[in-house]
Amino acid sequence: MAAYADPVIPSYALELDGVTVSLGGRRVLDALSWTAATDEVTALLGPNGAGKTTTLRCLTGMLRPDAGRVRVLGGPPGGANERLGLMPQSVGAWSAVRPGELLRYLAGLYPDPVPVDELIEALALGSLLNRPYRRLSGGEQQAVNLAGALVGRPDLVLLDEPTSGMDPHARRRTWEVIAGLRERGVSVLLTTHDMNEAARLADRVWIMDAGRVTISGTVAELTAEASLEDVFLRHTGGAV
Image (cartoon, rainbow, N blue to C red; front, side):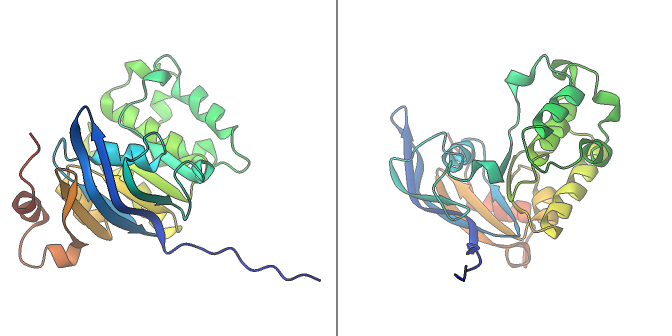
């Protein structure tokens, strides 16, 4: 009988090596290199215009770099999208749908989805289920977006400003959900402007400016002598 080896689990959920992207004649990513370990929460921080959204587009396969190498769960971008959960800042295509219908539809696309009622309870979505998505507040839409990203039980979740527009209660619930993902072995990439959020949730932080990493480390390493906000301000100048 033939012996089958266990699948190799990559050390890194995400790897970028020398990734360069130019858009409209401007270099947006400039030989960008960083990694995100499996089973950890990695925070990618940077001012507006630093290249974070372009980086996410490269990771999802929506944008092909001009140079460099991108690996997602050990393979090329797009090759493992069924194992990837993406939470964008806004989803215009969902404008007219009601969250309850949306989440049950998304659950039906996966062989073993997270029970929709479990997500509704964790993110306190019960009062939103029958309201059109477009009529929800920005923070309420974010909570629905997060539920949609998690319903398929992804191995890797990309969260783009997940608590933007949320009130303190919703923000705390979201933090608890993200912490729970790490406990279950889900790898998480988080982009945020909230330094407290990054310090609370992240295992490792990468700070970028003008398309390049300027400093990285664990939260403990980066904040040994200053707050994370001070470190951020010291190592970024703000993109023009």
